[in-house]
Length: 241
Image 1 (cartoon, rainbow, N blue to C red):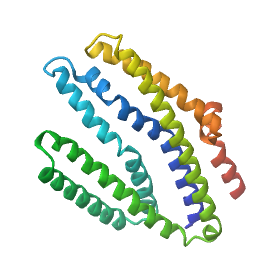
Image 2: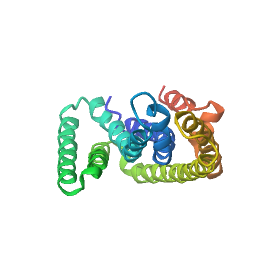
Image 3: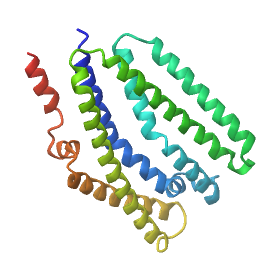
């Protein structure tokens, strides 16, 4: 039916729900990447220092989780419209960006830092994908009847929601960092201690994150807690019928 206005609403809802989970997950890996890797890998043939290095690389990769999510969600708009050419061309741009950054990192960075540069290449590539698809999707959906009138308001609403989620995510990550710093002084070294640290810090992050979300009035958090998430789409479908 080419109801691009409804597609835009679905896209916004998908972005909100994805961000609700991806933002705290990415920030958790950013501050807890090293103990996570130690808990998972610091046994058997992998030494503690090797696992810690894996964790640092994981923390760099975590920076690309949010733009990767945005890129992937927005790419689905083109597939829904029967356009497989545009996402393929965007992927060419994304891959080219990653190759260029990785080549530059390999040429410029010292040998012991190159692995972080390679991880950074993927982060930059995902940011490029998110930026390109954002522009293309806005242009495509702007042609829908009624989107011109509501598009700016919708973007402002989405931007405000993402900003509040990011603020809550940083607060939760700060809480996790404090808990991790305290427990690092008391728990035993090794993968068992790292596992306990990660579990405790993750719980602290979730509690702070949810509390700040509710304090800032993020609708998605309230909907999830009250199990009212699907009602928004159902009510919209009722209006259409």
